Amino acid sequence: MTLDRRSFLKLIGAGAGAAGLPLIGRAAELMPKSGKRVVVIGGGYGGTIAAKYIRMADKSIEVVMIERNDHFVSCPFSNLYIGGILKDLNPLTIKYDKLAANHGVKVVQAEVTAIDAAAKVVTTSKGTVSYDRLIVSPGIDFRLDEIKGYDTAAMEAMPHAWKAGPQTVLLRKQLEAMKDGGTVVITVPLAPYRCPPGPYERACMVAHYLKQSKPKSKVVMLDANPDITSKGGLFKKGWKDNYASIIDYRPAKKVTEVDAKAMAVMIEGIEEVKGDVINIIPPQRAGQIAVAAGLVGDDKNWCPVNPTTFESTKQAGIHVIGDACVAGAMPKSGYSANSEAKICATNVVALLNGKETTELSGINTCYSYITDKDAVSVAGVYAVKEGKIIAVPNSGGVSPADFSATKIEAIYAESWLKNILTEMST
Amino acid sequence: MMMKWRGWALATGALAISAMAQAAPPSAAMLSNACAGCHGTNGGSAGPTMPSLAGQSKEAIEIALKKFKSGERPSSIMGRLAKGYSDADITAMSVFFSKQKLHATNQPLDKARIAKGASLQEANCGRCHLEDGKEGKDDTPAMASQWLPYMQMQMADYLSGKRKMPQEMKEKVDPMSKEDLEALLHFYASVK
Image 1 (cartoon, each protein chain N blue to C red):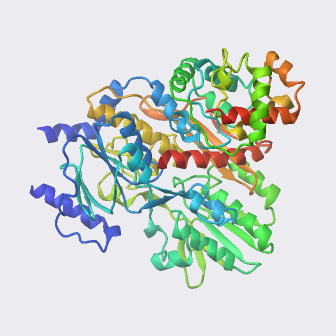
Image 2 (spheres, rainbow over the protein chains, first blue to last red):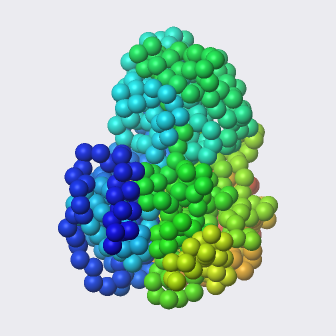
Image 3 (cartoon, rainbow over the protein chains, first blue to last red):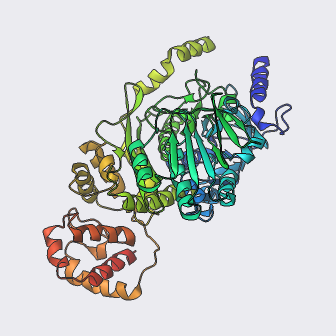
């Protein structure tokens, strides 16, 4: 009992991100558990699908999905809003009412403040919820300590826009307000981070807007990585063909400090770059609740998991999916999270019923826009070999290097979004 | 005692290894669920340029995937994906989707074209596209309720020669006007 209480308090201490919530003592039980129950934390690309597929496989299992918001805004395609191609975020926004109506998922809008792995209890801002198995799909949070000066106030001056919603709108507004001839700085953290091609697609979409509306302006991209981390050849061609005089790509430039008042970023204490609009994509780690619950590995950032069940190797009974987990060759993408959620759901149902688990077979598909009418893609098929998730040899890869398919890829990309968001919300 | 054992198991990764050792090879559902991000849950597509797979025959899906894999059928992403699967995987996925209920779509269609397409179907296509396109002879795909934009893109590939038409189809399609073909596709899309 003492041990339990101490570890609980430790989790609270670590969960500083949840400040402002009444955290003294344990709240009352929110919904008493009778039969088998899975709790899912997070209502994004991973969580919604895990919740739905468990219910599709076994209606006798109660599924409670806990999410802090009453809706979800997709990061995929949010760069098109930043580039002015999408006029609002409505096409990227889903609600949860049909998951409840069609599948009987119990959706609780609350903030998760602690996980007690030994007692199998989740503490939320509305009360506690006990579980037989827990699926954590919290997405990412930022390692703000690695960029000096990038605090909450700086985030308003220099948005990250790496969680879709108000930050995305803020970055768009700043671009609209910028004078022609201005400089937009986009900074990229060292990999791994959410959505490897995302920063480079963003550069395309910002440049697309500038080319049309503010043609004397520039994009300076400061990338901490030695080179473009995904679809490199395709982005380089896309930039050369469309934005040669706009995008100035500078690899191996790691931003370590920001000065929001001076609108400047510092690269490892030796070089200062100023911008009229500055988009800081900070270094990332698993969502705060995963860190607080002791699910991150030796790197203190990401959650190691079993490649069949996605059960944490740190805490029994807790599974981690999506951007937060380490899934071998599967990238930190929305489609990967969708695929991982189904694999996890299948095996969570098997484990709860004392049945044999099933080996992973996964897919990733990912489109990036170069212009409003051209897109490129990467695809992969994944399997497990010798305990590791690998890309199946001689499959997958990127769309044609000569851009012969960019128009059709852009057409397919729209259906990609429609299908994946429909899957998550119906 | 229990705690000690768990501590040892975590330290050595024995938990992970024991769980993996019991796992069965990927099932038809495991393989097929991964496709649903783009083709919709159980293969019922909500995206107008991506086909519904639900209710297609085993033969139709099997042949399509094998042709994507070999490159015989043109594609943007499907060729890259199909190469990741064995023939046995392809058969398992084909059986899975063939067992799903045909996915009814609601899409804007032209009434006059539907009527014209219905008579063209009966006179020209009904020997292979059975039951108003709800079924198909051998590996002929089901057309009923399929997305119009998807079918238009495929027809464009047929007409340009990018995708090879079966001989029986070519004989029927060649004399038809573009408007006839468009009417046919509106008809198929309308069938529920």
